[in-house]
Length: 315
Image 1 (tube, rainbow, N blue to C red):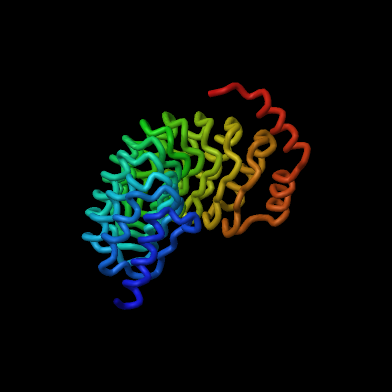
Image 2 (cartoon, rainbow, N blue to C red):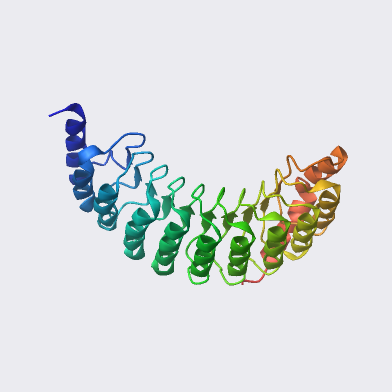
């Protein structure tokens, strides 16, 4: 028996007997080789392991077909990291089928998995049935507007997911408009990352319109999206009436002086935003950035925000 086979046999035995030292199992940056079936069988009866990392494990379609269905029998598993594997749409379909009935996983990382639109559509189907998952990372997956539309439709019925990361995909205006529309209905999502998704100024305007009405989203990341001054003005108007958002990332967008001035004016009314990222927004007056920073850290403003939250009615 070679060294790798002996290592997997030992691991499988420890998983089967629920070794309390195996709350976290990290097999990342290796290769399962012929041992995927052995790992799957060991997971089926496991009630101890809470985190499984298979990051960059060169998973094959055959390995995914064996491993993913076994996840539903690993009742203690809360975190699954299969990022940086070529999951592709076929693998996403296998995982989605498992997620539809999974009642333990709360965090799934599928970053850099070549999912594309078809994979996103498969996962959207899982979200319509899943009532446990709270965090889903889908960044760097070549997901376009079609996949975003499918995910947005799922968000209109799924109120369990609290964090969706779609950074560095190809959502475009149509995709972000669909996601923005979902925010008008969804009451669960608190964090949305659509940074570097080519949403442009029009995409920021679409998000701003829904932020005016949304009372659950607390963090919005939209950096590096080609958002101009008009997008910043729209977001500023939304901040004047929004009392939920606490973090907004606008880095690497050409907001310019006009956009910055609008945001500064909004902060005179808004008391809840505490983090505003503004690096790389173009030529602006340094004193205005300093003023915004001072406003965000003003204890009087923070006290007003605390008072508003104490009296804010439930949605």
